[in-house]
Amino acid sequence: MSRITEDTKKKIMDLAKDAGGILLHAQEIEKTVEEKSGRANFVTAYDKKVQAFLFESLKEILPQAVLIGEEEETHAALPKGLAFIVDPIDGTTNFMKGYCVSAISIGLLEDGEPLFGVVYNPYLGELFHAARGEGAFCNGKPIHVSPHRLGDGIVIFGTAPYNEELSKLSFRYAYEMFTRSLDVRRSGSSAIDVCNVACGRAELFFELLLSPWDYAASSLILTEAGGVITGPAGEKLIYDSKMGVIAGNAQAHKIFVDLWQERGGA
Image (tube, rainbow, N blue to C red):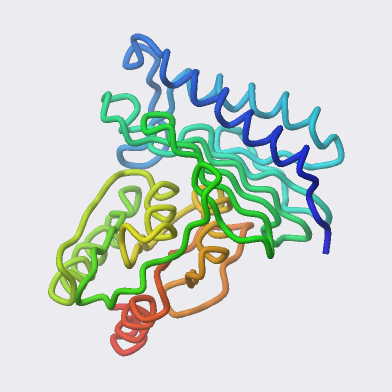
């Protein structure tokens, strides 16, 4: 198992903060919006600008690492060795509407498994990070998942907006989780959502279809904070294709997975 040096960690975290500054100083965002394939799927000039900035700088930090990002025309295959998986703006729709819940997400994988992850929310100035086997942190302070049971907790969910069938199913499961918890939330940034579970602000997050750049960084932050993150049926996360993601403390995670298995995902 590789270990990432403190200097490399700092460079990647500083880079995430610099990229966050691009979001904070963005102007006339809606004039730069383009539609991508799928319902309500957008990209702005700032997504492309941030990704280009990250790629250039990450290549200088770890020249041997493959670079995979959301805004590429075609995505490189996940290789053996080191690979960065980057979401330049997680929460693009929020960003273009001025709804300030978006993040920079940088995941570093080794042989297909997370090694280091950074999620930076520039609007709150919160930088989450984790290295494999070293715990999880927010602004340098250790974080841990909530000890509360789901009945005393909050559930965050995503709506799988690019897939109508899964969107309908998402709302059915959201209601099921609503009846088992204090309440539900929807933010529009899965990276921030998983980090909010990691630091104990909520007990469970689910979204039935995400891409690897949505969770490559936050999945490590969640597990290093003592949480459990899998697919809806409890299957292991993969980082080379889309899948559903369930993240929570052990008790809340089990409730969702047990319900999913009991109902056969319906």
